[in-house]
Length: 300
Image (cartoon, rainbow, N blue to C red; front, side, top):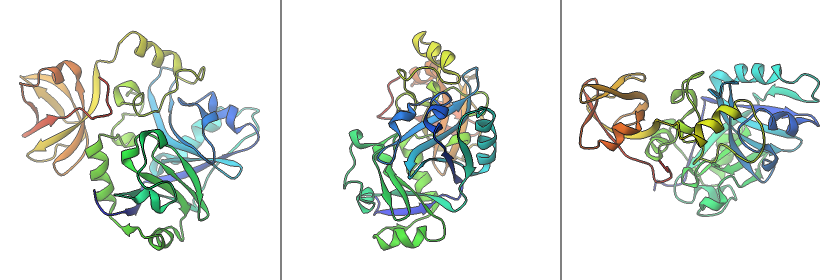
């Protein structure tokens, strides 16, 4: 494990949802149980089309009288617009919080620097607490991914250095993410096309099957109960030049999947389950050879 470190994720942004109807409003739209989110708990969730296809994913935590959504910066305004379409007469306000930034905190003992426990366990994932003008939480997808913090942008780096965290590069966090097989928003999920279950959302605690209806819930549930998942997003090691996202992956002359994000000799790929079963036959993407590895957390 690397030493306890942090990096400011410039590709992430924060949205605040306020108002007395905020819980009921989000509850009917997103894939997870918003009633579980609050000042002491963060959740991971997605916003889908009515046909159950991916539009956005984000973390939700409570802070003061608001829900804060940690989302993709490049697609923040689209998320605000889409949520606002469903506001109708709900007493809610949906606003960007440009004064806050998102930091990834990782490495051995890193979460403890934020007051979240020395070595987070799977039972503690999502545990949150107020932290120096913002909020910090253990990654609700996977405790091994350590923690995140939503903090005042003008002082976040100094705040994190003051508690003993070393500044790292975003690439260092990305390497850890890829090694764990964690998707990174629209870098790994195709907007309007990807489904939650092929992308690991069930195992990564991004879907609640008992909360009742949400947008896209019917088709997501049908996919699960009928066993219709035929592909999965999996980490791959790469021999050769890193393939571009979208590169077709072949096995024995047949299409087996598609490359998604990557860095160096690591990447994520959407692969057919039957191709994963034929592990004696090599996978190739262009001139590169790929070796998939099922994550420890995955259940396929």
